[in-house]
Image (cartoon, rainbow, N blue to C red; front, side):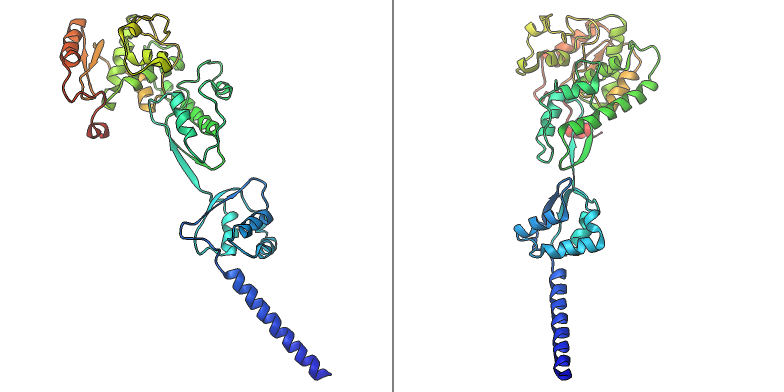
Length: 346
């Protein structure tokens, strides 16, 4: 009897060792992931059991119970963080749990260029496949809550590159852009030049948006701001095309006509209405805000596009009219409203 018991014990040990070896082999086997990797989304509140079941259903890992057991034994199942993860080829189940508890989720980036309108910014955000859509447009009530008491949210969002994770919304990005703009505007307002014709930072923001839209060469921002500031101080009409175009909205077809310049019904028509327009007309960057608050000194009151991306500045109306005849009425063959790439990079 003792002999048979001994044999049975040996067999049990051998079977146990064999089973342990098989389990170890299965545990250490890498997940079934191709060379492109696996994009794994862990939803808020999702459990390890749910993730393991999903991996089994997708043919990535056949032993979800082993994953659950190891997670419970190590406590990693309680430290799992939601988000999107890139699981690379060769990842083992243990390495997967370490990844899911690390919080090293995939991040994406979206750029809002300087000088675009809020409507364009929202369009760019809604083209991001990883961002969820909440906003209906520039006048969405969610945006209005950010800029109260102002009725138009245009201009209140700082153009920059923003990183985000899957599951973020277009509103999340604009919330951050709004905080950034308020911070930049506050900093630049505190360092403004004396004797400017602005009573509030908001008026400076409006001017900065005009400077942003009028500037082809970055080096001209301060000089363009100087022209507009002097015109304001002299109670002259600003007479800037970008404000009219903004006021036309979807009615602008790309051709600014004389009838547009005469239209007093357009509140943004600075050929007919003195002072600043009712709101910003674009999202200005820090450089444009700085220029609006620190304009270049001088006597110039006019400027006209030369056709190479830059402008010809004039002190008198007679000088300006000569420049218009030279650069606008007889346009060069290679006329362009923006500078060539090498000039932009300078």
